[in-house]
Image (cartoon, rainbow, N blue to C red; front, side, top):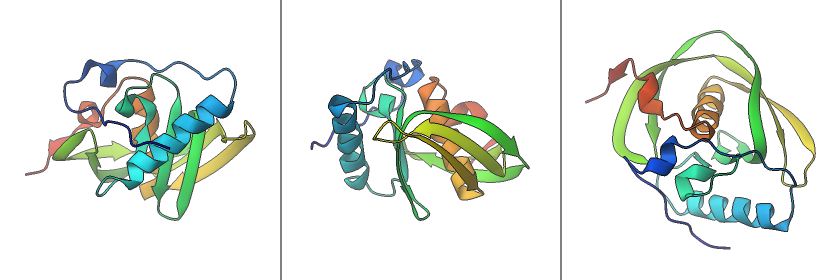
Amino acid sequence: MAIRQIRFNDDEILRKKCKEVQVVNDRIRQILDDMMDTLHHTENGAALAANQVGVLKRLVVIDYCDYYLKLVNPKIVGCSGVQECIEGCLSFPDRFIKTIRPQKVTVQALNENGEEVLIIGEDEMAKCFCHEIEHLDGKIFLDRAIEEMG
């Protein structure tokens, strides 16, 4: 397992769309393990999308709010409600913004064994899922800012 370099600020890879994973194999599991190690090696990290470590694959790891997840090809398949959020991002240190996000989301993905999972996240987890899955589409949280916090 390895700690990967997190990409910051204007790095163009953060704006690139990640490609869907065709087969969940040992190589994909190794990337997910590296991503989780990288997440655990950072301060205040809740989740990480693959392009944040320079990998253009649809992979997300989360260790937040009692969730410990390694997700392949995650997508939001349902959402409801509205909430105002305060968001930060490991790729944009010391920047915090207000956003409007769904209060509840349903995410469909594959786990690290290639099995389909359906996960419901509410409140903070809904925000987290939205934030990370948008990374995979080359969108960053600053795009959603309704206000930048001091």
